[in-house]
Structures are given as C-alpha cells and as structure tokens.
Length: 380
Ligand SMILES: *Cc1c(COP(=O)(O)O)cnc(C)c1O
Image (cartoon, rainbow, N blue to C red):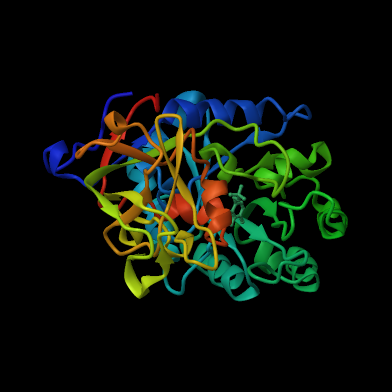
C-alpha cells in the first residue's frame, strides 16, 4: 500500500523505523471473519490510533477489505474516523460525554450508552430534535466498568419514554476474562448477557472482542468487535497465536563499544558485565514506547532484540532515548554503526517482550513509534 503519511524528515535522521503492514491487518480481519460460521458481522475495534498502527491507514484498508462497522473509544477518534470513512457505521465505546450529543449527531456517530444518565441525555436530545438517532446500549455483565446494571437495563428498555425516543440498534456487553478461555466468568457473563437481552431479539447483540471470537459461536451473536487480533496480538494468554504480525520496529545502532568484565552498564549501574562484553547502543528508548520495565539488572533478566537470526539481550536499564544490547557473540559484519536492529516484529513478538516488561502486547502496540519514521508496506 502507498505511504499515506509522508514523514517530515529524511529517513537517515530518525532513530528508528516503524513499518506497518495494513495488508496483514486486513488478512487478520478476514481470518477472524471466516470463523463466524453463524453469520455474525465482523466489525473492527480501532481505538488508540488503531492500536498504534495508524487510524486512517488501517481504517481505509479494512474498509477496502469489506469491514463496514468500526468501534473507537473517545469521541475525538470517532469524529476523525468520520472524515476518513464518510459512510461507515462508527461507534464510540466511551459513550456520551456531557453536552456532546449534538456533535455526535452532526458527525453521525453512535455512542455506546454506558449509564442511565447517558441514555436519558441521548433520549432527551432525540426528543428535542424530533428525530430518533442510533445508539448502542451497553449492559454490564460483570466487568463493572461501563454499562447499565442489569436492573437499569431491563427497566430502561421497558420504558417507552426512553426507548421510543431513540433507535437502540445494538445491545452490547464486554468480557472481563476472555484472555483466559477456561475462566468460569466467561460462561457466567455469556449466560447473564443472554438472559438480559433475550427479550429484545429484534435488536442486534454483541459480546465478543478478539478473545470472544476465538471462544466460539456461542459468543458471536450478531456482531463481533475484535481489536488486538487484527494487530497480530494475543487474544488468549497461552497457546499458539495464529494471527500475522503487522508491525516491525527497527532501531539504529549508534555506537559499538567494549565493556571490561566487572564494569557496569547504564543508569544505576544495574547490570554488571560478567565477562568482557561488546555492546551496541541503539537510538530508541522508553520515550519511543520501548517500555522501561523490559530492561535487565543483575537480579533479573530483561527482554531481547534480533540482529539477523541472532537474539541479542538488553543490557541494563532502558533509558529515555537509548538501549544497550549485548552483541558479544554476533558476527562483526552484522553489528555496524548505522545498521538496524529489530526490537519488535516477526522475530520479536510484542507478547514476548511484554512478558519481560510485566505487561501485555496491547501496551507495547499502543505506545509505539511517536518518534520513528513510519513506513506502510510489507514487513519482510
Ligand atoms: C477494546 C475493546 C474491544 C476490543 O478488544 P480486544 O481485546 O482488543 O479484541 C472490544 N470491546 C470493547 C468494549 C473494548 O473496550
């Protein structure tokens, strides 16, 4: 795909390069869609700048693949997506912020109404306008973040002064423990969602995020809304990850230096060289989304990067703008000033790096690349 966001500076001035393969994102979407044997619609959740991959590029490519319904989080994301996709259905998962109903209506955004207050404000706006505008209603089935309680939900849907005012075109809820397929809460939430929404069969229903898609047809209902799986991340905590990687981060080597045995590397002298080491210092750090927690110390191993087929461990603390890598055992011709090191991509899964940083790949993806050159194209 053509690079739709030209970078403001010459490539050689960047510390790193973030390559995003929107064809791989589209392939992941199609692969999830092929699992919907019961005929549910496959939407796409592209909040947080499409999990770091670029909202505009990703939305256009998914739309080209056939995706027609999109979920984002905050209203700003929804309004900006509307400029990109004039005809798509767009939901704002964060719902209705006070006093913003007219703005959402103006941009044809559907809020996912997450409380009785939001529902009443939307209904009142519709009544005042004399028109019935679309919205989703979110019912909480146990995660206790957004969503009407079961009781509120049932009484609201039975109230013609509310339900007669606007067009509820999606009833939805969200799984708390989808990433752990055997967790009993999945079944409990499924059952609660069924019981609460069964009386309103005329309205479309949605429960599944990426994990919900993989949990099977019981969870699919009329529409699924995967996010992380589209971006090659892990929906389930364990087992094979069948999705294609969609992003690669390569960072430039600034210098290569020797460190004598017994000397220390980086801030706080956290890591001591146990033997004479050869280190490569690369031009990216936690300010580029390479999380500080993935650094190493004498007490605790850190993450790694790849140079060719070679795994190179991170040495010492990750700084704001640089990372030190152990290249002692790597052939010299591969470790040259200016050469690129893969910090994340087909050979360094975000989920693996995330394990060292005690986080999840969602956090890596959404933090990536504020300072990198951005390139859209194949990862290879
Ligand atoms: C983020 C989100 C999704 C997508 O979840 P993934 O785990 O990334 O697939 C779906 N629904 C809601 C309500 C969300 O907040």
